[in-house]
Length: 454
Ligand SMILES: Cc1cc2nc3c(=O)[nH]c(=O)nc-3n(C[C@H](O)[C@H](O)[C@H](O)COP(=O)(O)OP(=O)(O)OC[C@H]3O[C@@H](n4cnc5c(N)ncnc54)[C@H](O)[C@@H]3O)c2cc1C
Image (cartoon, rainbow, N blue to C red):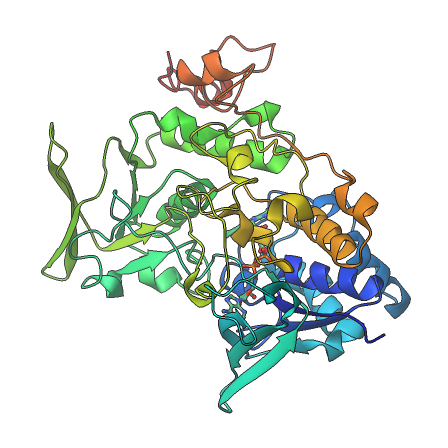
């Protein structure tokens, strides 16, 4: 019997883990990666310190492939940067193990379908192999496979600045002064931001991390002015779960940022859904025109950190069943819907939730979360373990739950709700300090009257 051929779209951490599990199950993986090297998306944010320690960043099947190569597994308690994640894990995995022979770099997938079956054609469809078209600079290429795991992430399709999900009016025209995601403010893009007024739009970890870096830059280069633009009205919601976050570094990030905000190093504009961006005298005028209170600010640069959305453009011939709001597989979406909960306590899930109406096609990794923001690598590793088991016909292993995920400590539902909604930020204050929350305690320790929470 020929072995099953499994096409894997994307050589990010979850794509490589998928290839390791597929290989371990005796099947043949082929990984198509758009970038020139594995881990291409991580290379765009490699200056960032991860908030998950090594314990959560290494896939078990990948570690088993690495062990015989003389790989030294990193200390599980240490938090790597993106660069360290690449150098100590992704690169050796992609270049020193059997995966080396199955990764095709500079190969961007442009379309996926089923041979001889357009999307509308049903009878016999399940038996048809998949056809994956890709571009590698040498002309159009096509590959046939028995199954496809799309782990192409979402990094290259960031959400726009516009508050309604559409680009803000004038956003494309101002592109030269707008960055998306997490620019390297203290490193290679320092000159772009030093001494400038920089507005950062968003309330997630990327926005917070960029604002912390800008506050550091402001101490080094006079004239640097960070402005935080928030669509919502409660900045405390962005400060996270503090000491309650099971990922300590993630909790500390929010608490540290709360103290920076409390000390006035960042100008905060709340209730600022961006509608229009215009240019005058080389500067940006960023405006909100909400019904009650239209206003604008002027900045030299805008960083848009409003999250990501999946690129579904090359899946037009695949029968997908996605949640219309979250754009995640329908069985997964209710578990991660940010309208409903933000704990990060998604229950482990795998093949059953991720399979699509086209049998043999799966979404996994960051892409499987659609527009939801709480994805962790370790969630993806569990997803692809289960998918590989499913493809190998091992239903028992595919269904088995092998993962307990760390909570953020900030839940819209459950124990902390009252505290967070009342304006407490960064989680509870240490027992020994008289303060309403962790950020309040930090502000008081810095000689301020408090963080302003109620
Ligand atoms: C700034 C930042 C910090 C993060 N920090 C953490 C953290 O501390 N801990 C944690 O667990 N998670 C973290 N995450 C979330 C997430 O775990 C990472 O984004 C992780 O890289 C996702 O892995 P992935 O393999 O699903 O996708 P990606 O790493 O995005 O990899 C997808 C790959 O697919 C390729 N690709 C895209 N389109 C195509 C195509 N059409 N054809 C072929 N290849 C394609 C890309 O080039 C890329 O190499 C962070 C995310 C960001 C953005």
